[in-house]
Image (tube, rainbow, N blue to C red; front, top):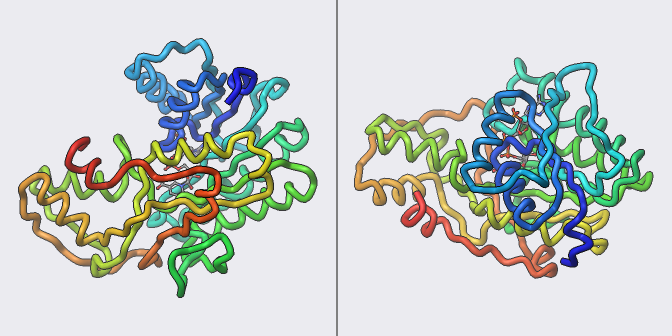
Length: 309
Ligand SMILES: NC(=O)c1ccc[n+]([C@@H]2O[C@H](COP(=O)([O-])OP(=O)(O)OC[C@H]3O[C@@H](n4cnc5c(N)ncnc54)[C@H](OP(=O)(O)O)[C@@H]3O)[C@@H](O)[C@H]2O)c1
């Protein structure tokens, strides 16, 4: 990437989230100017403290605090923003219940529309939308390609698919967009299934597994996601395209528990329960399309568990 590109300014929505904070650090280290968004003073304070802990100088960083569930939003100054990477979303599959219906719709669909429209109006050069492998739902044929039919089976997957369609419709009106669908991401400081199982095992607590534990995920390290986004950012070949993104190896929940039990030399007590919402049995991406950009996953889950955890 040329120095000219490095001077560009990028707005990251959801920069206070798990992927957002590692992406902020990654793109900052590539010398981009950034506006990092979070929904609250507290989450921005935590992001600042995380970045300071990584010894970065904050010269190229601005912050934008806005709660997209409010009615009256205020955007930051868009005059010199070159790209938007839209990470903000409600992301928990299991919290997608009737009680939370409006929140999922408001954030994953309506807020996506408002930000996408603003980006189009301001003629920003590239809009990268983070969607999810959950948009595919139950699938007959694996690995999942970009052409696999999308039949989501939970509220998270459905509202994220609607968000994709909103962005594609703005694409028809001139927005240069790319959709990225991470499947299951992991890394340090993530409150995901790996962290939950790790904490239970370390604290000798009973472990609840939803379903029979044979459901599989192809985990991808967050550094690999950041690298994929970097390959796509401002790359005109990627405009109006979508990319599925997962690890190359699948692990069942039972296998994950075994790996973590081995790491911490414990034998956890496990209780199997019915999941509260529909969940996927398998979720692995076909990486053919993203590999054409030069992408290759660099990290393995075993390395992470045995050397980084
Ligand atoms: N992690 C994964 O395994 C995974 C897999 C597939 C797809 N994705 C997609 O990748 C993106 C980032 O995921 P993530 O794991 O980083 O999610 P996350 O940790 O749950 O972060 C969500 C982000 O959205 C922001 N947000 C939540 N409610 C908001 C509101 N009312 N107004 C404004 N912002 C709000 C949060 O801000 P605060 O921190 O301030 O609340 C946070 O920055 C999402 O679009 C997700 O669908 C993630």
